[in-house]
Image 1: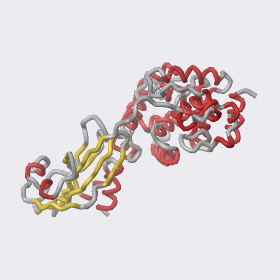
Image 2: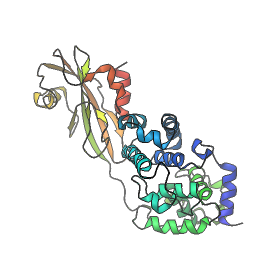
Image 3: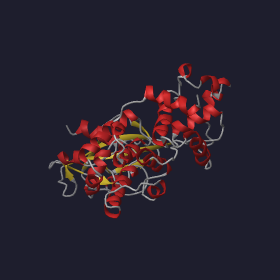
Length: 346
């Protein structure tokens, strides 16, 4: 029995049921693949269902307002995915007459669709033999073949894609891709892989050479930096507060947040009360400031660790700008702010 035959037999028994696996509609596959990038299946599934419910076709997504798309995406992170999703939906509707391109090369021309997503759509929906390479595939192939190629090297994608393509064959490329990713997710897991029931145990290089914990390899370790965020939550007699949209590139671009003071360390009340800090966002000088959370909230991102403190800025002067407090819930904000808003504005 060949390696691929063993894999497909395993997949037939262990295949999980997901809503996007119910059809080969390219819109559904595209949507699921974009949502599941950098996101666990358990977390991404409710978002997929919500998007399908609100935007059942690419035409509905294209016609939506960006704020609505970002609000539904709220909590998934990597918000450029949502903006690219929305942009590409408009392109498919306007330039492709609402019909998805059918080839890998055509799909690659669309914004937000890289090698991985183009391979998934073209193989699953149009039976094109394009191997999908993600973290699961890197891990399975690295361990089985004992490959020490750093998976974050520039040449790794091409090398692993050639290998996966050789294993794939041409009969059912979409099923093969899903089987290989599923095997990595359920059997050949990053930590505590289920080697005792693995169908490849006897011929797996990593298992037989005690290399499971060492493969796959990376050459670059992510350096995590600490940042300190101080959010100013204005409270006024007319129940208005301030939210600003982040327009600078980086985390949370185009999402909304309270006026922000970044610092090199934790600020005390005297430092945050300085008129120079408050005056960045309002001309109001008659304010009283108090700390809402005594201990900074730690929020981990892939390359950053944020320490967030919320400060109540109370004034008796009415705010003309800003928005009413009961409207704050309507704006797309980072997940850590959403948690605060739900608790603070009951």
